Amino acid sequence: MKKKWNVFVTRMLPEPAINYLKEYCEVEINPEDRVLSKAELVAAVKGRDAVLSQLTDIIDDAVFAAAGPQCKVFANYAVGYNNVDLEAAARRGVMITNTPDVLTDATADLAWTLLFATARRVVEADDFLRKGKYQGWGPMLLLGVEITGKTLGVIGTGRIGQNFASKAKAFSMKVLYNDIHRNLDFEKTTGAVYADKETLLRESDFVSLHVPLLPATRHLIGAPEFYIMKNTAILINTSRGPVVNEQELVAALKSGEIWGAGLDVFENEPELTPGLAELTNVVILPHVASATVETRINMGLVAARNIVAAMQGEVPPNLVNR
Image (cartoon, rainbow, N blue to C red):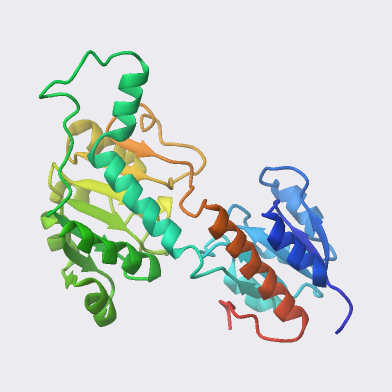
């Protein structure tokens, strides 16, 4: 084997992943549990052979230039890689990898968690009880929305969307889906029916988003879509924050245009649009869809194996810019 690569890890990862990487590489890790500033990131990547980056790191041409021509791979610790300038990577001859597959179950499960928590007002009820407001059972107390037998709309038919939709069978739900093209495998696996976007929004009791962030999906859901949706409908987003126009979502939630929302991602993360945090008909989580011990370990191992494969002269298993 050639000499060990010098690898910088932009944020601490679960120990098994770091230990695996250290078997093959010289590893330095950001000692602080926070996102590095742009200046800090540029300084930290200088002279590295590879970088294990996070979705919160903006990897652009300035970062590639700082790393230098010997840097061969940026292994992104995420499925998405919209934080990476792929054109700049291509110009610089840098491989970009991601961590697909291993977080599918965790993310789909979290989408269902948000759906249930929003529909049954779980967070609101918990807060109600803890504040000593509960004086006994009442027929009109914290009424929520029925789930079993309702219509579920799924936008995006990738691994996570398909996993999420397949679990609707347990609740006898009718599933509608929308994507750029019909997906016959998705239909076979989930029993879903293809619908155009407007029909899906109009007929669904719950709408769950599972699309990547692309120019075509930015603000995919906004005021026109909320107008079409039922005023009893609930929106779930575990994909990317900018897929939803958050300012228009706040307005729709305030006016009763839709019944509620469950969000794990935000348009200007980590900042929330003013007014969102004060609403009781939205459940908001701090981007924890993949936050299980098993998933985060596996993500780290996948990212580390991508780096080691590149170091050994192989094509990384999860190369996204061939």
